[in-house]
Amino acid sequence: MSEFVAKHMSAGYKCDEPTCEYKSNHQTMKWCREGLECLFDQQIFWRNILDVENALGKLTASEAKSARMRPEFAETRNESIGMMNLTSVIIL
Image (cartoon, rainbow, N blue to C red; front, top):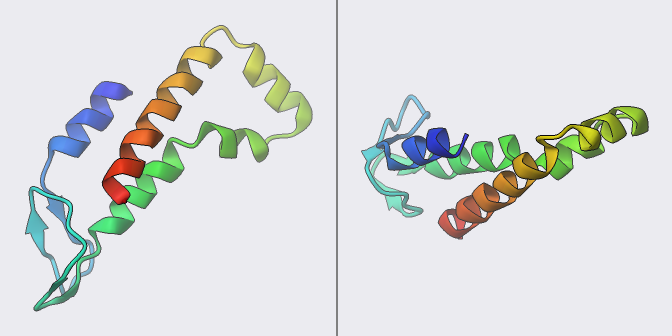
């Protein structure tokens, strides 16, 4: 998962807004002549995908307990926290 996120972060960004379609290799949050760049939404998407605690909150108590008992849970949770910290730095 870490390699996949690193690959995504190193790739170029393209605005999903059809009227904008701005392209960049850097995350920016400024206005362009086509309108506000929508790249911020891509980072929010990844932050939501990686939020293990939020996902656990949506499970029933027995499902959450079962997930926490899995051998790979601690490692996955720690990686998730690290990647969320990375996206927080980029978003801010």
